[in-house]
Each structure stands twice: as C-alpha cells, then as structure tokens.
Length: 317
Image (spheres, rainbow, N blue to C red):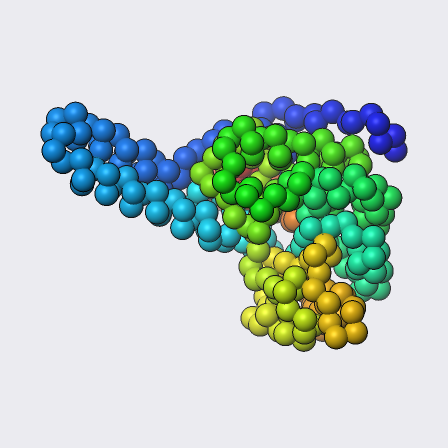
C-alpha cells in the first residue's frame, strides 16, 4: 500500500451501518449542566447577591462532569461500549472481545499475533497513529491476519482529556487518516488514552462517525509484573459479551524481561477456549447485532400478528 497517498475517509449515506456521521444527542447530565448554568446566570441577573449559591451550583456541576470523565466505563457523557451488544434472539452467541492498546510494538505485537493465530482468535487493536506510522508492516499484518485496527488517537497525549473541541478533533482525525491509510479500513471505534475524556469528546466522535469503546474489565498489564495476576483480573467472572483490555505497547515486564501481556494473553485465550467462548472483534460484533436485528424483523413480520421492529443503526451503539 502506498504510504504517501492517504485513503479518503468516505462517509456512508444516512441510515448506513456505524462509521457514518451520527447526530449528537446530549445526555441527561449534559442537559442538566446546561440548565444549571442557565439558571445560575438568570439568578445572578435577578438577584446579584445570590452569587455564592450560583457559583456553588456551577462548581458542583463541573465536579460531576469531571468525575464522569475520570470514570472510563461511564456513559454519563455519551454512549460507551463496556460490553458487546446484546443482539441474540435465537441462542446466545458465546463471544468476547479482546482489545489490545498502545501499539503497534515491533517486539510485542508480532508475538501477540502469533498467539492469537495459535488459538484461532481475533482481536481489536487500538493503535496510536504516530506509532503505527513507524511500523506500517505490523499494521498490515494485523489486518491481513483477520484482526481489526481502531483509533487510539494520533499521539496518545497524557493531557488528552484536557483538550478542547478543536484539539480533540485534530488528534482523533489525524489518527483516522493515518490508520485508514495504513490499514485500508476506516476505524469505527475510538478509545481515549487511559480512558479519560471530557464533555467535548462525544460531539467530535459523532462528526467523525466513531463510537467510544471502553471495557468490561482490564488487567493493568502496563504496571503489573505478574502475568497470573493480570490474567486473574481479566478472567474473574468472565462471561459472554465481555470486553477485555490488554496492551502490546507500554507493556510491563516480568522478572525475565518478557512482556507480561504475552503470558497473560495465553492464559486468557486458554480459559476462553475451555469455556467455549469465541474471541471476536468489535466491528464483527456490530455485524452480528445487525444480522440479529434483521432476523428479529423478519420473524416478527412473519408471525400471526404481523408487525415490524424498526431499529436505527445508532441504537446498536
């Protein structure tokens, strides 16, 4: 693939599957915060002496917004995948998603790919744009071996959650172009660095046709040197629809200098196989949910009380 010629970020027509621009719908928390600000302003105009109460209300609303942004699995600021969509109507699909962040890494990622191949498992790689640019052949290997490449920002800045709308747009859109160019596929999902974000993120994701994804549980494998401890965190309560988080970039090392993710991932893959859980990608989960929705519509339309269930693709997000 020519690394100098970016592929266009084509936007599918309205009503198409995820990947097209979405309409931003503020959450109750966002709506409530706007109402608090408006109420505080009105109170100050009507009674300037009440400014301490108005300031306190505004400060409290900002504290709640900050807490929501510091909680990676929160949906208070917008839709957030913490598990795979429940799209089964005829038998439960026994699937989980393994997601791998912060790569690609020239030493770790190829070994991760070999492990996944050995267990016939597919994973979702949330790649950093500038890192992917340094190792384009690894990005290509991820895709050709049946895995998905998704957006983890262009630079993985530690202050990502402090950026305003324009800064977030630049950071995420740059990664969209980079990863589309290198993988040949437009990313559908975004994961914030460290999972931290602010209220400006969701409108940006809507414009770019991206869905925020976090996790059901994480192994903390960037700072834990014991693979068994990492695996235990991931496997405790493992069930269908879980999204697990590991890292090929910034991976912690054990006493022998080996990346912890390698042994921990093998333990997870072995446990999933023994539990008859299939490892899928997030984008494949969308396809499965869409297929099930179509099946539901056909089955109900053909029933004795014929009726249709119309479900917009955004509802799968």
